[in-house]
Image (cartoon, rainbow, N blue to C red; front, top):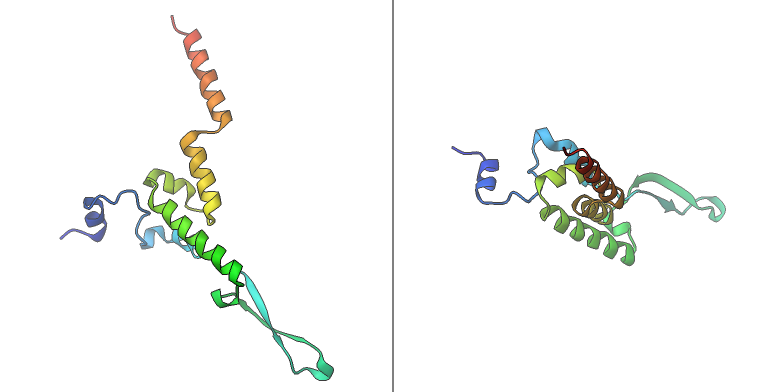
Length: 132
């Protein structure tokens, strides 16, 4: 009987992020992004004083409408990017959590930075000069 991982590979989905398993949990844990913390305001103090409640993790309902749209758009963009890149590139960028960071690094890896291009050109000239 074949494993689920083998079934996925046979189906041709080699460009998707690896399945969540115990050996790769660390990279998946980074994908679960906290939205920060918030402290609820408690009214009812003496003389109208405002008191802060305990600090808790923010949830989607704590975000403003604009923050919600940005958060959802970033998740969609991140999912699109992660599903469309090869495994070797995924392993290089899997620690980034924002779509913009993922895109910039994938672009740099695929196109190469200007420094990398200059280094390659310089290396080719050096190799050419050393030919007999």
